[in-house]
Length: 214
Image (cartoon, rainbow, N blue to C red; front, side, top):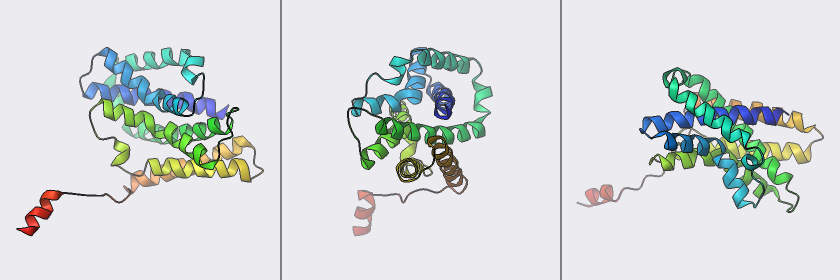
């Protein structure tokens, strides 16, 4: 139940941020809807394709697609209002990242046809958490933010590992494991944003070497 509520909150907030991203690149309404849907449910779709999980969530619940399209169209009518809630959406995005990550791990754990191990479960969670944003940025012709901003994918990885360990190696009820992971992952992401924590950046510039050799 907790994950279901968080899932709906996450996909709605992601659809709104996807719509705003499409608006910044002056896309038509089809492009807006596509970017909104990709951002919101793209990660889960990619996960289901890779792990051969059928039917996909939005196929089982097409009402989610309708809800997301409605939220996207509403955003186009009052974009400046939603844009002014930037801090709120940062928090919702962090919450959504952890919720998606937990859901991805859970999906792999509960897959009946395959007994996925630790590595695949973690990968499933990370794919669910970050893929939608990556596809959104690629379609907007920009380097995905997950590759160049504060710790994001790393937060998802840590959250996935924590949830997996709590699920299998503690006697805690699943709802408690979910809450612990949410609190830890959300806090981790907020700290990363506040202190601008990021992974080391690899810079390779052939022109610099040529200049030094002259």
